Image 1 (tube, rainbow, N blue to C red):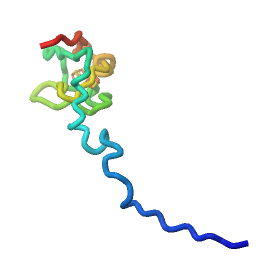
Image 2 (image 1 turned 90 degrees about the vertical axis):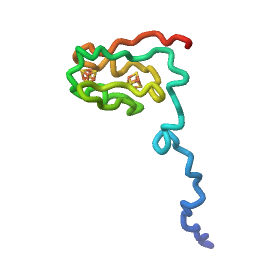
Image 3 (image 1 turned 120 degrees about the vertical axis):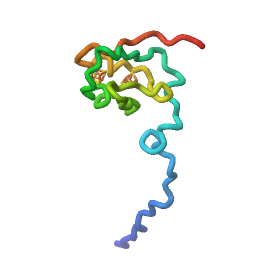
Image 4 (image 1 turned 120 degrees about the horizontal axis):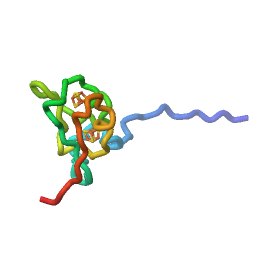
Length: 97
Ligand code: SF4
Ligand code: SF4
């Protein structure tokens, strides 16, 4: 039996834009198709970071005494509002500007 040799894997042939979410997610602007937006009630936020931990797009940023979503990236999934232990985030319907 003739044994065929398999050429070594060449990773340089893989396009570098296969997974834009993990590499350049800022360009996706997932906020463009959001139907609901998370609105923070600053007085209720204790800055525990739970929303930041659960946000699937990692678009929640830290401010002086609260955390808030970057609306360019936030896709309005509502997970942050669901997980916030202090009910500091309310989901509101997105409106045309
Ligand atoms: S989970 Fe709620 S209380 Fe905690 S940082 Fe986020 S908004 Fe504030
Ligand atoms: S609605 Fe979803 S994407 Fe937007 S900040 Fe909350 S968890 Fe993140």
